[in-house]
Length: 490
Ligand code: SF4
Image 1: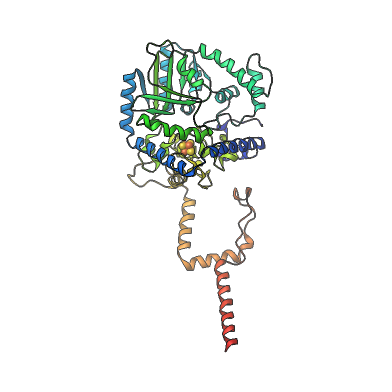
Image 2: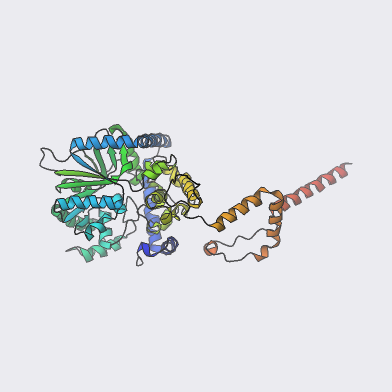
């Protein structure tokens, strides 16, 4: 695979060009995505049952979001009752500082991490490192990326863009006593040995959270490798970090969501580990002495205020929309340049980062609808993409409350004037006919190269005759034929 250039040194278009022209990357993604799509399809063989389950998942998430402020209060009081300390963070910086304060309070020098996309969102590792705390990723994919100084390209399988040859070279260079091998089991055992040692030496464990149950004050974490269980039980302190939207109301809301999540993500009926954390250790010998939960907003309350945009927060991070997206499957995740790539990233990142930073993402979709069709909680992703495109080119009216940061980031006077002219032209039959006639008469002047458009397409030359004139000609021929028939009969 070619040498990667840091994401932020390139524009969105440059990243797209780079990744479209990387045949190895495209081949890897195509294979991996086909595999994941087949796995999901193999699990959902009864469409009627699937649709019922999706209805259930969607209504559970909608109900939870409709009561979000109350459920968060209930969750906080239950967690505190259970002995878990709750911290609220409005921004990534606040979330990182809370984690650092806990680490400093315990004199911690090392932190072992289970998978946490929210900690990617806040760039926690870099922040901790800068402040003298070493953060070690224990999820296999994240561990590989940390060694490679790379970023996740998928939210469930972060290192999916790496080949086993890449990993073999990486382990040979970075792990003690690890020779080059392409045997996957041996590679996994080498990493495992290294991580075991790190788990026992770590002062703090940090993980993400899949769901938080308000009724019982429980943090639910699903995983296959056991690193989540180790990170939540071996070190003396466990910090869980997640977004405020992950709360659900009742414990019996959990099974349908877990079924939808694991089957949609990896085609598994259930993951190897389902961890439910409801308190620090009690009389047991194992388990952390302290458990903390850091709840991050980071712009999530902005879409919450808008009924349509709020649906974005229903997401359970299964990645099915990414695995089925014709754009993501050809590009991979790095081209998007954000923590959450693919269709979910294109509807979520504008709220987290603002539309100025992410204005191209809602347009990085063919709007084919595949993402919306597979989403287990029925998020209408194509509708939300269209809405974001609209908000990107719309100026707020006077005194209108913003529904997103960076409103109108794609607004240009030229585009506005072009659409106004288009609307005038298409609403006046006389003007439209004149335009169509001029376009056909002057078709020879159509430029063969048009910036951007003709990179991958041929130039859109008007037809020799417009549809109107063809229909007119056809009708004339029909009339002549009818008259001739009538004359012959007479
Ligand atoms: S938007 Fe839907 S399909 Fe995509 S990650 Fe979220 S829950 Fe899964």
